[in-house]
Image 1 (tube, rainbow, N blue to C red):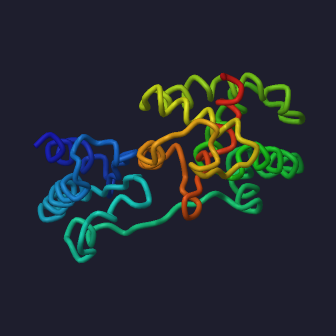
Image 2: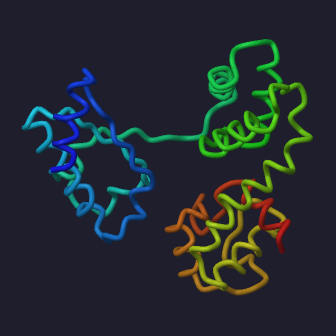
Length: 231
């Protein structure tokens, strides 16, 4: 009822045509069944439309969020337009950098620096850009001296929360993967032996990526660097 009241009392009188709600990481919601959350949201937002309330929903989740739903004709799946995000290419990173910092001659080297640090990962690209805006005080000629402070912030705001969701044994596995000579490892190559369930759990938590049959890597090189620095 509160959202209906908000539409009548605030949104419509302000001549706003619609409102979009953003939910991040929907896979972290408590309901173990993806369709339970997705269907409840679908029912609620369809009800808004029936009553002429122009509310829309946009949420992020893991790319396999709907994979356990047996039929993709299910209402919980059909209701949503799905867009699969991947890392930006260097040209896309340049476009993003120009949008954030303004299009000027300095953007080309800055975008290359950002790409080298983030590999075009949207989250890290946005995080580092936000920190640059806060720390550079208008001077972005040489962002490298700011990197230690940015990485320290990333450690506290992102990576430590990543580790907070795993067990001590899983942390040990992540650190062993970070120490490995190659980016990709297989359980059989590990000096310390781990049951495969640990690899599966860390893949479900999106801290490891399965890149082939029995091969895994950490989800990003920056996370790898953090693990190596905090051994």
